[in-house]
Every structure is written in C-alpha cells, then in structure tokens.
Image (cartoon, rainbow, N blue to C red; front, top):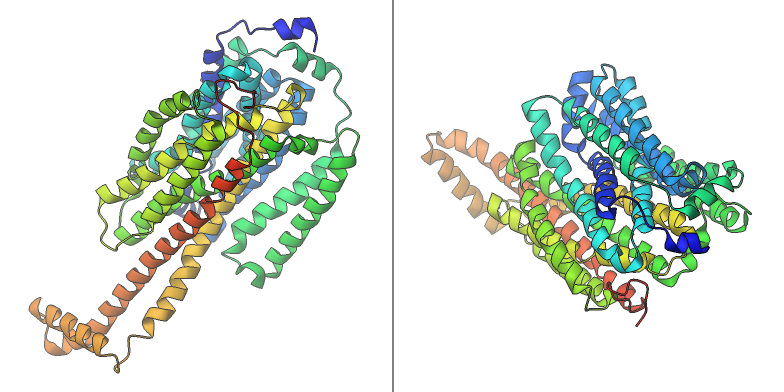
Length: 523
C-alpha cells in the first residue's frame, strides 16, 4: 500500500456516507419481504393464480442472489461509487415499472430487473463502509447497517400490509421511487472511491464469463428449486430434482473453477481467513432465522388468529423498537468484551427466545405475540454487528469487495431459503400433527365422546335443536383439531429453529478473540 493510500481520508463525513448508502441497502432488503402479504392482491388484480403470483418472489430472489455474488468483481471494474449509482438508478427505475405494471409478464420482467440491480446494493454498501471507516470504528458503522438490514425484513410486512390495505399493491413498489432518487443524489455528491479502488478499476482483469455462468447455474437453480419445492412436492417433482442436480453441479464445478482460475469473478480464497469463514457461516444462519421468523409470526397471526395484513405486520413493530434500543448498547459492550463471547451470548439468547416462542396457544393475544417477537429481536441485536465486525477484521483490504459480496450473499440467499423451508415445515408438521390427533377422534375414545357431548350441549344452548347439534358438533370438533394441529406445527418449527441457532455458540468460540474497539487486533 502506498503512502498516499495510507493517508487517504474521505472528504465527506463518513457517517453521512454510511447513512446514505445504508438507505439504498435498506430499500433493497425491504423489497424481499414487502411483497409477501400483497401476493393475493397482485394475483387477483392481474388475473393469475396464487401459485403463479409467487413467481414475483422467485424471479427477484434468483436475480438478486446471482448478482450479490459477483458484485465485488463488478464494483472493481466500474468503481464502487459508479456501480452503486448504476444499481440504485436501475433498482429505482425497475420499482417504478413494477408499480405501473398492468400485465403479469410485465411485473415478472421488472421484478427480475429489480433483483438484478438490487443485488449489488448490499455488498457495495458494506464495501463502501469498509473503505470509509478504519477498523477501530467499523463496529459503530455496522450498527447503522444492522438497524437497516434487520429492521427492513420486519418492516416489510407492516408497510406492505398497510399500503395494500389502504391504497393498492402498486404502492409497495412506487414508495421506492422518492427514496431511490434521494439516495442516488446523495451518493453522487458525497461518496468517493479510495485510491486502491481507483487503481483496481484501471487494472481490472478480463471479465470472467465462465465464472458468472457457474454462479448463475448454482444459485439460480437452487433458488428456483427451494422456492417452488413446496408447491411442486419437493423431490417428488422431476422439475425440482433437476433444479437441485443442476445447482449441485454448478456449486461443485464452479468452486473448482473459481479456486484455480487466474482472474475469478469472485475470489473464494477469502475463506482462508478463519474469522471470515466462520462469520459467513454465522451470518447465513442468522439470515435464515431472521427471514423465517419475520414470516412465521405474521403468517400465524393472519391464518390462525384472523388478523389483517396490517395488524399482522404490526405484531413485529415492537421488536424493531427493541432492536434500535439495544444496538447502541451492544456497540458499547464490544469495546470491552471479546466479540466471540458477545456472539455466543447472542446465539444463546436467540435460541432461548425461539424456544419461548414455541409455547404458542390457539387464542394467543396481540400483546403476547409482540413479546415473542421482541425477545427474538433482542437476540438478533447481539449478532449482526459483532459478526460483521469480526468477520471483516482481518480480511485484506484488496479482498473487501469479494468478502462483502460473499457475506451478503450468504445472508440473503440462506435467508430466502429460510422463508421457503420454514413455511414448508409448517405445512408438513401440520399434516403430521393432524394425522396423529385424528386417531383419537373415534367412538371408542371416552375423551372424544365426552367432549363431543359437551360441544353438542353448547350448540343446543345457542338455540339449535338436538338433531342440528348432533350434526354440527363433529365438524366443529374437527375444526378445533385442525386449529390445534396448526398451532402445534408452528411450535415445532420454532423449536427446530431454536436448536439450529445453537450452532452460533461453538462457531463463535472457535473465532479469534477480537475486541470491537481494537477492530483488527487479536487478544
């Protein structure tokens, strides 16, 4: 590194830069969940089935995941600032086109474009923060990212439900336009590239089209297979099997190629950094839990408790408040406690919160649902900033772009998988639970007979005749059984995610003992 590069300092306030670029990343993350609650409205408005409407999610996630991975190479060739401007401009234009779409093919096309340009926003935002802040100040900067990246999936269903219920589904896309324009002009005036990025841009190697093909095959087929698995009966479907086989081939041959290519599209050797490799594994698990839990609770509220999309989203709001309050405290803790112990504590706290969330009941009220989500976000607050701080602490400066791309890809791609897997597990466990409970609904079961008589008497008390009550009671009991099966299914999935989260503890303890204040210094 030359003396000029060592002395380089941004002309603009780094905190202003962090806020501007994080606004763009926030908008992109928001769009991964804001569409979920609006799918029935999109399907009805454009005269397509619910199954077809979910392709608006799939096309976005596929394009997004692919570009996330190769964004480091693109930012090297174009410069971080120019690439971020291209991404935010393209994303904003595609959002406007989605909002004005009148045909289903149009929204599919523009969602893919939106995902393509949006995929570069998160990793480039991370790279710009790494460029503008010295290691000892990065954990404070990542606190801003944490508020955006963790709150955006939580706010998505709230905002999406409100805009759809109050106005129309078009506004879930149109709301991006003013925010995108503001971010574009902010980046244009305040963000700059450091000397080493300018040098990389001038000496960028030939573009690796073969590597892009492998990345597209591996991640594209994986996203399609996972996203469509539940609808197509998973491995019972020839289409899903082909997607998984192609994805496995893409990963296997792609990794071999990228490791030995002279100028790979993404440098996998960044995983030689011990902390970065473990940090990427942890952020992937955190992304899985973050996105899965942000979908499960609103889904439970809507399907089992009869909440509107707006009220189901509002269940998540107090959790966002808890997160904003805790993140500054976590930043102060990192100045005194080795990061790996903070991560281990966060993993234990999140696992305990998910275990607590498994104690669901059919008549759970709004207050208790809010408490469940607040306990979950308290655990997340102890994970994102510490994991980001330690993962990048010892990564060489010239690999920041590749590291940010792979780190963001792991969080988003596995997060998208978390949405699909968690909802599929709910369906599977509901069927399993129902099959077990229904065995007790037989005339030979004394408990069933007594409960059936109790329901019949309750119906008679409401004014039905004995004959009407005898006819209606079995149906009401079966409906109660279905409701109970669904509640048990959600409880099962929260229990499974609780056990999965425990992996945070051993992986954290295997990391080097870095303190947030020291940034890159080991104990």
